[in-house]
Image (cartoon, rainbow, N blue to C red):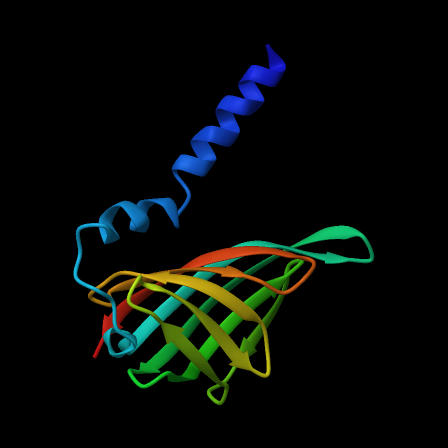
Length: 145
């Protein structure tokens, strides 16, 4: 009974995963373009990072300007790692890609790396961190041009 409940929970999480939902929508949408991600966005994410073998909670709310050409700049960010709050002023940069299937990558310089799935019109993107020892996912949502 417990194993069936766990399998059901895993299936529900898998079906409801952010990458699964866009895949269904993308099958009927126009091809994505890197240029679609252009404007001011808010990135909100939460998860954990492993420190000395222990899962430490982390969360972020970050304002990012996507330039439509594969470059981005961080306008500001507030980060909480194990309850310690850090505010990061303007200054970070990064690179991103989006292919015709709406999948791509995002790399902050310096900083973490992410795989992403973007909406065809660039209103949202779903990210998951790909650096080792991290379970961290979030959403980028457009707030202004």
